[in-house]
Each structure stands twice: as structure tokens, then as C-alpha cells.
Length: 117
Length: 113
Image (tube, rainbow over all chains, first blue to last red; front, top):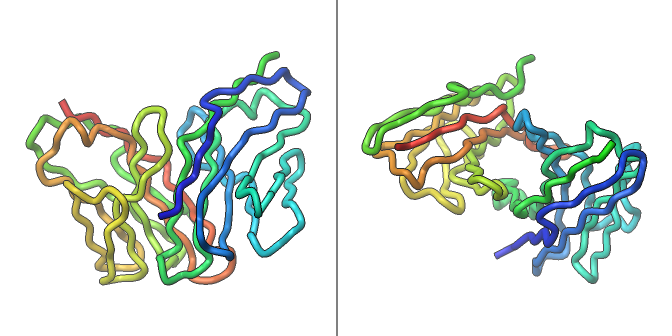
């Protein structure tokens, strides 16, 4: 079974600085998708960024970028120029590429990000 | 386009009571899911559906039942509520094709006492 591990329960960053959240996963599949979701205090789950395993290029979305290391099964999220609105719980998630398994997501336990002004 | 809606937002149940959590999506998505999120934890899949009339168990299905009679609706039934079911419940949906991105509802906070 696939597992996703986020080893940092909590992180802090100063406003305008850069922070990196870690995620590792375990799978025997070669084709899959990885995601970072943001959950602010409102509880709404918001997709931040997505990476397809077959793509070597790291995904970027404005201030958010990933460092995808397929051989190491590592998928970290870098937030640049941190803003107060970035404060939230961040979840790393995995899903198999094959739709045979219903597009199910496997989530890590999450990392709480605090942003200091 | 409301996306994924869930009702109720909050509910307190007594041990042994039953209830249904409602979930509706207006995006014509084939796939729908129910997750639970325990305090300080990630989401765990309870049940999912790949289309009307088709459902399957996820990682933590015990104590729950689902049905999918229409594309839009995917209710989650708790038959005999237990304190271990105190959690936040999220419904999600995703399309067949494209990025298969999952769209989440706002969640239902359930407390069983």
C-alpha cells in the first residue's frame, strides 16, 4: 500500500522569507501524481500544486514550487516571499495514475505552517 | 455553479443515534468520495463511487454506509454513532478525464457524545 509521510508537524517562517515543507512517499508504481493541498482555518481544502511523476520538470505556481526527486521518493514544497495568508495546514497527497483504483488520494498527516509578521 | 456542497455544517449526536451526511455536486463529476479528518491528522478515505450505482470501500469504512442513486448525490450514513466517529467529514468529487483533480466540500464537523 502507498504511504505518504510528512515529518514536520509544524514549521514557522518570517513574512517575506522562504520556507520548505518536506514530504516523502512510498510506492512501487512508476506513474503517479503528487499534490500539495492547503487547509486554512476555514477547513476548505485548496489545491496548491500538482506534479505528474512522468514529468522531470518541477511544477511551479506563482510563489509555490516543488522539488520532485523521483528516485528518492521525495516531494517538497517551497513557498517564496511568504505571506500571512499562507498560514495553514499543508497536506501532501499521492494518487496512482491508473483509474482502475478510482482516483483515490492518500494523504500525509500534514504540516502546520505559521507565518510571523 | 456551487461546486460541492455538504449539509449540515455541524452536528452533535448521542451514542447510538443515526444520521445521514448529505453531499451534492453540480459539476457532473463521475467520481465522488467521503473522507474523515481526525484532529491533527490527514484525511482518510471512507468510501468512494465511480458512478451512479457503483460504490466501494476505502481505508476506514467500518460504521458507515453509502449509496449513489444519482450522479449529483452521495450521502454518507452513520447507523450507530460511536465516539470514535467524532471527526470532520469531507466530501469530494472529480471528473473522468483531464487532471482528475478532486474538488472538496466545506466539511461537516460531527461530535458524538
